[in-house]
Structures are given as structure tokens and as C-alpha cells.
Length: 268
Image (cartoon, rainbow, N blue to C red):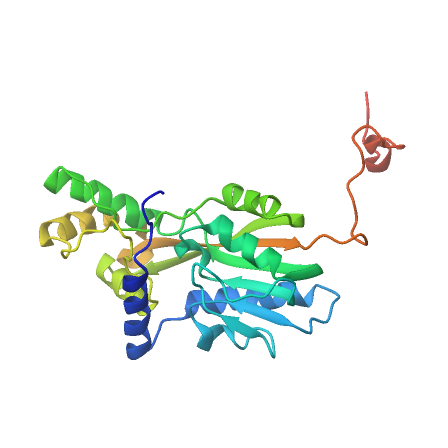
């Protein structure tokens, strides 16, 4: 069995601390707005929606009447119980992302819709690079400090592996800026997104490493007005439980018209 990626107890403590101090929800707000916009484009009225989330107080309002399920390793779903399942901002902490998508797919009725949103692979790449370079320079070692997040091409493949039809994966990029790396870290704590890696160091970041990371970050990733840039990616996955009414791709070579005829280009 591979080693655990996430310390679930630490993740729970991080979320609880964020709730006590008042969570920073701007990334959830962006994800929620995107999900609602995408649902608005679907010509369907969902009667038994469900949402997988570690933040029920944020996501319960995404779809009226939705059942909110905790993002545990084993999801509290009955097979075929829902016509819509949304996996909301929790897939990046999952020990088994494939298993999470498969469980959601099994919870769908035929022609039910699966939607997922999670941070994408370039999220916080500036912070990851700066901390790694600083720690290597100061201590000669390297400690996992920022959660590795999957690329859209990798997670997009999960949809087909889970048996979902008409799979689509796309990314929405967000650029934000902070006064310093310390302000960025404070925002991550307020999101409940602090370091909950199982392999993380159990001691605080040495001051010398933090000072070096601040220099590296400011040098390589500057933003206007003396601030630093931070990238956030929201990755969206869409798939449907198979049903005979869905459109099917044509067999290769079965086309009866030329693409050039449809586009009407100037041909030599």
C-alpha cells in the first residue's frame, strides 16, 4: 500500500481553526460561481443533487435542497441515488482521487451529471518553488511544504476511468498578489489549506529559510507596487453517467462530408 498523502487529522484541525477565526472563502466563492454558471447552461432540472465537500457551510447553497456529504475516503452514498453529484474543492486532498470519482459515478442515476472543481497543478507554484530553493540553499535538504496538485490532463483521464461519458476537463486561472509571503501563508491558514501532508516536517519553518524564501519569491515572482504574485488554478471536471439517449462519437472514417467544404477555405 502506498504511503498516505494526507494527514486527515491535521486537515481537520486546519479547517476547524479557519472556522474559528472566520474562513477566507474567495477561492470557494469563485469556484461556486463557476459551478452555478455551468449548471445554468444545462437544460435539466435536478431533483436529487448531492455535494461532496469539507465546507458544508459554503457549498450547501450551491444547489437548493442538495445533500452535503463529507469528503471522507469512503463517501456516504447509495448507488444510483442522485441525478447530480458535485465534488467541491476537496479532490486535491483525497488519498485516492480515482476512487473518489468512481464513488461519485456509482452514486449517479443513468444520465446523471458529475461536476468536480479542485485547485489545479499550477496553483501556488511560486510558493512551492521559493520554499524549495530557499530550504535547499539554507539547509541542504528539502521538506514537503506545499501540496502537489494534479494537472488537468491527469485528472481529466479519471472521468473515463470512472466510466463517465462525454468527459470534459478545463481550467480557469486566477492571478492574485500579496504584500509578502507571510501574508500569503496567513491567507492559506484562513482557507484551512495549511500544510496537512502526511510527510510534512513537524517543526515550524526555520526563520533563516523563511527569510531566504522571501528574497527568492520577491526576486522571481514580483507583482506591481512591490507585491508578490500568486497563481491559483481552478480545475473543472464534467462527465455524465452513461445512458442510451446520449450522443455517441462516429466511427473513424465514417464521415460523409469534407471538413474543408464546411469551413470553405481558400485552397491551392
